[in-house]
Length: 98
Image (tube, rainbow, N blue to C red; front, side, top):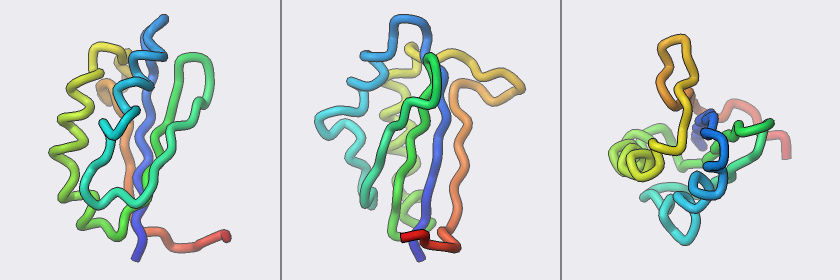
């Protein structure tokens, strides 16, 4: 079953391009990733939305995803509430809308 993960970020002022560049040109080409999007959700806020074959694919890519995060962690603000610099959720797709 297809799985999806969503990661929320808040970028420090003036760091938007550095954040986006950290994902460009194959830098976020994690094994098992079927497709992904970064959407701008507000001023300095973004979400990464990724589609995977299944939850195992997400788990297997987690170390590489954290490695990518480590290359741009300096561009991110702490989200507060004990979250750190990311707010990530993932799960199996239960309904396809199209």
